[in-house]
Amino acid sequence: MSRFEVRVSKDYLVFAAGHFITTSGQCESLHGHNYRASVVVEGDVDENHYVFDFVTLKNIMREIVGELDHKMLLPEHNPLLELSEEGGSVSVRYRDRKYLFPREDLVFVPVPNTTAEMLARYLAGRLKDALSAEGATHLTGIAVEVEESFGQSALYRESLG
Ligand SMILES: [Zn+2]
Image (cartoon, rainbow, N blue to C red; front, side, top):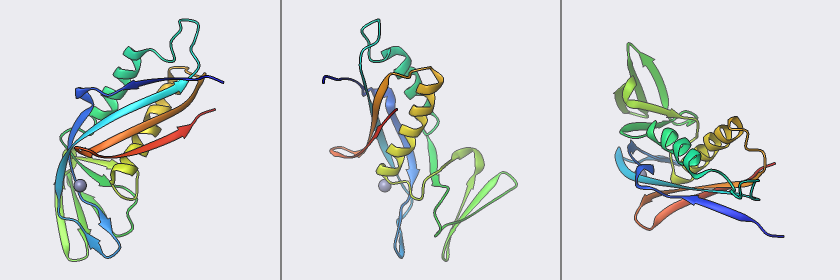
């Protein structure tokens, strides 16, 4: 059995974003990273001898990643954080610490924590939806890597079909 993979890792898949992680009993200080995403799409080649068209793949990823650029990333499903929205602002409370952000500066990410692992899984989910919207049914797997700083990254892989 043989298989092919196409990979995209481009400078425009870099996104600068703020976040903090909660761990059991602790909450990091607010800080940011220049994250870099890269993707792998796996499958057999189609009638044009492509696994998937690079231009379309790059456009999909550029759009998804662009939504996170210059934003504060907040986990939507973190039981340790109390989120409330009022008058165009979102307040985030962790015990006696409270942040107030303009709504337009935030992206709520549907994850329990904005670790590189969870961001990679989130991006893979968005990619998967976009690929099925493009009618790509022959793909067998996708992977997304999110690099948080040089030499430090998390990889999420998922089989399709
Ligand atoms: Zn961090």
